[in-house]
Length: 232
Ligand SMILES: [Mg+2]
Image 1 (spheres, rainbow, N blue to C red):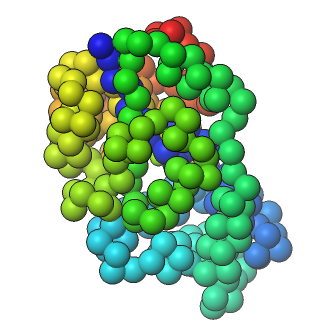
Image 2: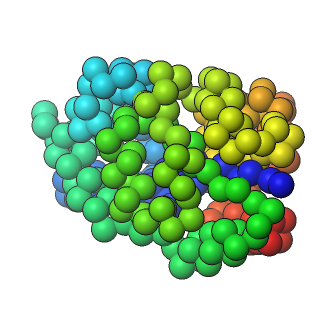
Image 3: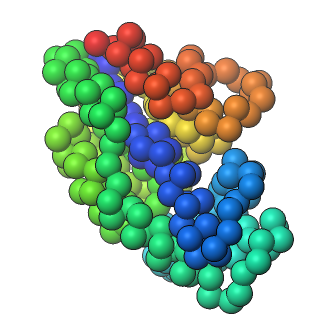
């Protein structure tokens, strides 16, 4: 028996495109280097993730702040309040989001394999992440109790206690588990420290880390084809 544990954002669907598009809509200008934009936005996201998970600040507030910090760092033309407007535009885009056909076919194939159990391990605030689970229709493949949102546990990625929670829920040993995620720091190191296997979606083609994951891919297509080859 194997357990495949998926991160949601930028793993099951591509969140980065929506974050940049929302900013471009509000600012009325193109972001020249989307990967650099995302790198700064995600660096800022690390700073107050704990406050978000504990509910001390809302997703809207924090995303508004992250946007304005990113605009500032990139010298993009913005006025006060454009951050929150971008956060709202991003939420609006999210309300139409969907998994790719390729990902749907892959999850369908994985879900019919009796030797595989599926779970989700996602960081963030409970209500926001649960809404995403509903929007993406993830209950088709993932039992609700196997969807773990860090904000509901009191632990933040990459705390290995999150991995222990998943092991308990799925009734599987560390060596039977695979973490699939885009953040080396949050998804991959915690899983490695827990003795899990790992698949890293290195979307920004970051340099090779010291500790290598079992597999590294850079695109959605590479990910789905790897999952089908390895697990179906
Ligand atoms: Mg992610």
